[in-house]
Length: 343
Ligand code: NAD
Image 1 (cartoon, rainbow, N blue to C red):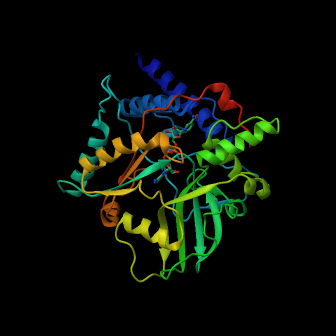
Image 2 (cartoon, rainbow, N blue to C red):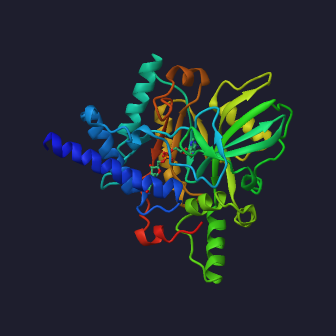
Image 3 (tube, helix red, strand yellow):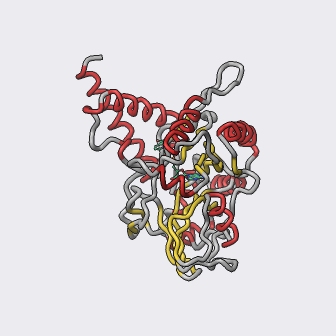
């Protein structure tokens, strides 16, 4: 390819991906399956790596998420809400996985930490939407979507309708302030029931649980959100203040969240002593995936020690201590289904 052709291809991919991202994040109405978005994204990443001078400032590889809707009040995140870098494991005809990308992630982590191996936690990668929940003196006061990572939408009223989110924290170890990060989603059974109701009422069904969850959480009328059963899983703590024995590892953070009253994906998150155990868990979770009560599109691998996380730090849009180890695409949604989305 000539330089002009490369520049044109970079421009084309950037524009296409930005359009898809707008449909997905802002309108909750994707027009293509995630696998297609991921394929273009990877092609763009590769071209930008090979020809860094041609990278455009509006490239999606510089950004997190999408624009926020002006109908909601905006919330500036005290700690940015980032994305995750991805690793894929293609399978050969015999079904064996090629884990080269995840092994390369581990190698980089260990090299940067100057260690032979490190401990990880693994969790399901929930296919919902990220929210941030703020509590002061144990009382829920505000919820925000990720938005563009810096500014999100205030969805406090709708979050109050999510029954497994504590409005008052439980337990003895309650901080003066805590900002909890996690995923709002719709359980598969609740999604099926919602679509049955939609059809019975002569209304269009939702394309998938993620869309139904995003559309419900971003409803201006919180009564509608209340009718759509949403569910929350905690997966991290952005900041806290005023506790005596702060957690030292990600696993301790998760256990603290559980003590405070948040749901965890019990039985499906684990501490792994090394990358070999991580890969075993990936293959087990991939097998369990069809029978889980919620949709997942991969497994998130996080360095367990918070000190090590701090050493590894961040790149522009993602932490360097975590990766989303994606599963191969389940049968792709059809474009027609994806467009038929209601909010
Ligand atoms: P991502 O969804 O790949 O990863 C980051 C997100 O993972 C976080 O914001 C959080 O919400 C979520 N997450 C779930 N479980 C988690 C856990 N246990 N710990 C931490 N985080 C967890 O990143 P992204 O930037 O939001 O989205 C990129 C993906 O979205 C793409 O890979 C693509 O599949 C999809 N997408 C699709 C389209 C489309 O048009 N179909 C458009 C844009 C994006």
